[in-house]
Image (tube, rainbow, N blue to C red; front, side):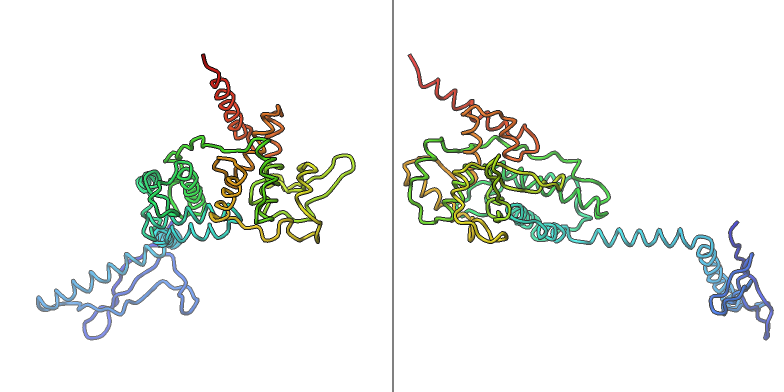
Length: 379
């Protein structure tokens, strides 16, 4: 049972009545720390009003006193519920005023390597679409669908020739935005998991350019001014490692076993356990002289649009008419092994793919080449 608060009157001097609150049961006086049944309001009415003016003042004072009584009863009987509800409303309102673009940028700063580059590119498109800011309270299904349409229709921000953003890039960027919104929901920034309401942008099987085994040998014998980039590119083609993995490789991760040859030690992100990737003697010979354990295997290796242009010039000087970037060397590794009859399961393990479906894309490339080959014979 709650505390009942009643409005009472006490007769005092000059024909007045002092108004006070009566509590049942008693409450603890916050000033004295002692139990109390009364709380005087410091308001008075005339016991026997003699004119309309006095009657009007009495009515006004009693109305104010009743409002105080009602509010006090609410405070005493629902202090925790009322207070926590108010706090939650204020908290949600405050969160709703926070900027999602800033939230996304903070998440971006925690990324590393090539993953960071992809996230910062996504941030640039998000920043352009929102004009630099959007409140969490303004994020809904409509916003996410509009952003999806924007990514599918906008031009590539890194080109000055109004080249459209590719669908695969749009897909990659949109997935990162959806991922951040899922995290925002888990962090209590959003009331609804908006991410689940809007489908991803489907990716397309891109033109996965690669070199044949013979082209790779020709390229190896073709001079290239950037020795580190040349060796790193060929190493990727012989191991299937991504640029980010090649760039961060240090000497203590390279070792040799008499029975198994050369290997690279890496730590699985999923299990946090060490695993080992075998590499060929030719791949090892590209590494140069062994340095200190913590030294980079390819010191000074950098990657940019300019470096890709250098790679394209190198490929062209080798007489190879293909659009080749650094990532194509990873494709080269996979497609050469497939064409040599290596099991797709083994290749999947060598590429460190989580799902063999990802590796199956290379099988489609080989099938297309086979079809192109047989179609060259006509009647």
